[in-house]
Length: 427
View 1 (cartoon, rainbow, N blue to C red):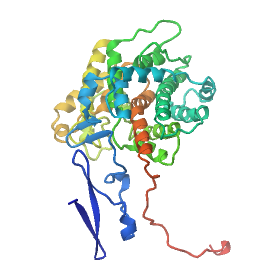
View 2 (view 1 turned 60 degrees about the vertical axis):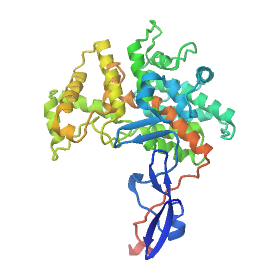
View 3 (view 1 turned 180 degrees about the vertical axis):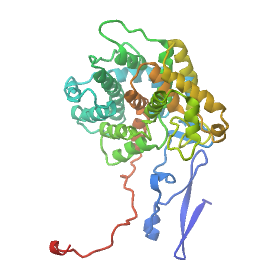
View 4 (view 1 turned 45 degrees about the vertical axis):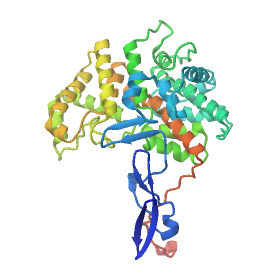
């Protein structure tokens, strides 16, 4: 006998089915709530509302668990590469060797970006925020790919995915090149995907670029750690926009814009801005830890704690090691990074932070790595977007293949009731 939940409203009882997920998550299915009762639920921020059933990512914030398609983030970060994880997230299973090689080769077929896209990026001022440029360029790809993807055709869907994976990496790095005033680089089809990211970003025509394996490993891990994170703001945006049957490029562009916000993907940028503020004040880590503990002080310690993870961020444990390796390998002497390390060491031993599980999160360590590589602060969220792309694509694909209805939240109106119109001379 299936379980049900009973809601009593105005003395009348109504039954609603219970849905239980594969990890024993319990949800009350209220699809028929309004039809049965005339009432709706009110849930600001949708913190208690499940918008869909998804087979992509499992997240348990209380236990600090993150899994893609059933595989732990620890195993994937340690044993797989980014494209391997992207394939898993998008298509549901770890690829065989031949499948992964085909996936990478098929992505390479779509890495050349139409030359007219250069005219579009040239129209932006040099100081334009890279995320604004990236969102615009992603949406502009629809002009060069006007056909609507037939989601019922696996071959066409696969081609659209490869096209998205190929072109997005190129235009994302172009936002950095534009800001630096460097010539735009092209993808090298003889080299792997993440290697190409480093080339596209940093290779100059005046000298050869040698890839540092420690840096490559750190970037690969960062992309994996950011690949998906369940129904967050940008992912929900991609699904919402896609539910109108908007195309893949337009839906991903909307996700980029959602990720831009400082409460979402912009968090790692906020970490560095905080560290710069501390440096300008004299660099006293103890002073700012005290400010963070003072309830009367508006200062917030960015990069510590997480809205979802109430214990620890499992991604932070993985990337901390990579951050330490990058700093040791590059031997960077940067006062900002010294402040970051001081904050980390002191907070991990401070009873106030330990008791409240306010540990450094993935944004804290990713910001340290990007800073060490010389990536400008305003590019941090673009880095996040590159890693998150497979998740957005997978969520869009799942939503369209499952033929989910168009998203249309309700509201509780709290404005004026019906009023009579007042003539101008009587107002």
